[in-house]
Image (tube, rainbow over all chains, first blue to last red; front, top):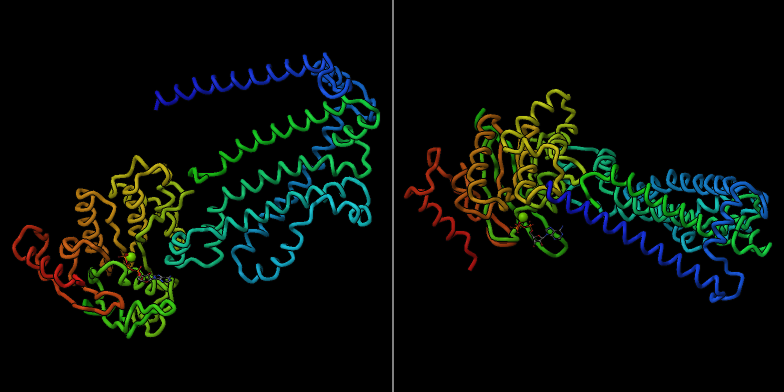
Length: 265
Length: 247
Ligand SMILES: Nc1ncnc2c1ncn2[C@@H]1O[C@H](COP(=O)(O)OP(=O)(O)OP(=O)(O)O)[C@@H](O)[C@H]1O
Ligand SMILES: [Mg+2]
């Protein structure tokens, strides 16, 4: 055990160093190419220009009218409310549909028709129904995140091992007890995989959702940057979206490790 | 009392579509009896147990436990399945508690039983391990322990020791006998291993090839503990082996 630990630590360090090195090389290459205008057009900002834009946006509201932190918080609020709503409604719905045939019969046909419709194509309808406020954007995000939540829970619980179900049945457990104590826990890894997809897509769907007349948000900042010809702000917005997405994944992995027991993944 | 009928199998027939698996089987098991069932692979042994626990429904005929149609909600049944069936998300300890919770056994009593079973299985140091961390035979021991933990009235075991090495098997054979005597359970034990069947059983049911019928109902009147090297034992073993041959 001790030997193993050490081996991992050594390797961890090695991999971290390699990751850092990749970044450094990438940034240097980008800087050199941009400084010599070797990337398409002279409007491509160099890393140092993006860094300047970053520092600038911490204290200044131009060109989009908000501080960077306001944009970040607005976007987080929208995507989180959409995502959380999708998990709260989507996961139980998928689980119940997967377990109870009757519900499946009723809901599945509707679900199958809605499923292939891209979430962004709901935007015009949303504007008519609930306007262009925070709610409308959150609903778009919700629709994106909802589908993988339902699908994964549904597929997962359908794959519950019959042997495990039989164990509970032979002890005289009711169908609902078996659902709660066998079906649901055996689906946890799949639920998490679904939530992971949902989280990623709800975050990356942000720019599209914020094309709905927004007044703040990272997607809005990117749009404004484009309108004002500020490529540095556009790239800054992209990088921050990527970076926050990365933090999401990392935090999510930690939570997953705590919740998914017995290494069933 | 001792001769009370525990299980009555009444003209039991099971088909899967066109495939006739059990063909009009009738027999009785007395309360507290230890029965071993042997028969060729795929003849319908597991199917029989699955009918008894209502995992499957009979095509015709009926099964009675204590003179009522079998019902796992009513009868205290335990089943040690042939395939690995420990819950992967529960620790060894929690797996052993699984049936006890369904039977609504109070917490202190659960703990007492789990400790006892862990000791019996020699797995005290693995109580917090997850099934993934166990070897196949250790996982199988958990399944056997889980079956014992509810102190069942009727204990069904489907080739439970198939994955064990000889030493473990001998040890657990004696353990199941101990439990059987202590709790007066009725045991139906399926095995491929004829030596095991003769070592354990009061009665051996020999099934024919599919569609299964009862080929022979053999009382084993050897005194316990049984000596697998005795002449009588070896003779019985040879006899049963001959009966099971399908060629
Ligand atoms: N759910 C099912 N659907 C269709 N056929 C089945 C089903 N369960 C069992 N069978 C068939 O019934 C026959 C008997 O199977 P069963 O598992 O009862 O045999 P077994 O005696 O337990 O065999 P083994 O010794 O290999 O465990 C086999 O031919 C099998 O294919
Ligand atoms: Mg079998």
